[in-house]
Length: 282
Image 1 (cartoon, rainbow, N blue to C red):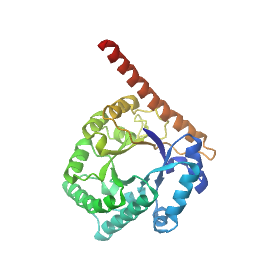
Image 2 (spheres, rainbow, N blue to C red; image 1 turned 135 degrees about the horizontal axis):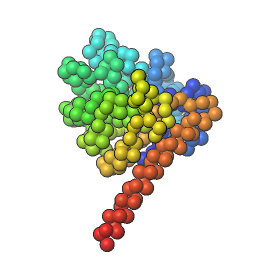
Image 3 (tube, one colour; image 1 turned 120 degrees about the vertical axis):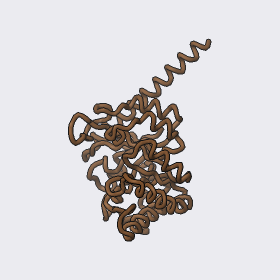
């Protein structure tokens, strides 16, 4: 598995530091984030893909994905037709850019006004995503849906679509907050249907839940989750969606260290179990 970080988890940074800090922390990738109208606007800039490719090459940091957080502000599933078209055009533009810069995944949040709560939302999501499948295939990019749906909803949605270009973005913190069975979700979906894994911890003893905690200090069962991910042979990106960092990158470095520790523990445990099985067989 390769470690990346959400751009928003770096905190407010210059364009240069946005690429410097992940490399400085020993991370291999950066998930670009588009959280407001201005962010979305840059996708239409013809020079933008060239700038991204240049920075990625210069700092030796891969673009692990593009996260379209701004879509959470647009009711595109069951709202006005104009909003539906706006959401569609944003995703299509992002897929085109992702294909040019080599980003494997475009994350599309289905939350807020676009949460799947009723049958009409479910049907609308299927129709909307199916309409984008051709664009994803042409760009060579996967659309990863992101939201607080349980594993049965996700499984049924992906099965109904039956499109390899549409997968799921699994978020540890969101799953814990929604009280979902993460282990069952991972094992039932399998690695083929998980496009990205986001590492985020949460303190569930307070209301609202507090996400400003370091990895491993909250209520997410990372060791069990890693065991499940390795059991289905997931080998994709693990993206840190951690509290924002500071200007000199010390906080980002701590989060990266926490994530490496989680991955290392799971590898050690797997090695120990493999040795035990081999010893018993002999």
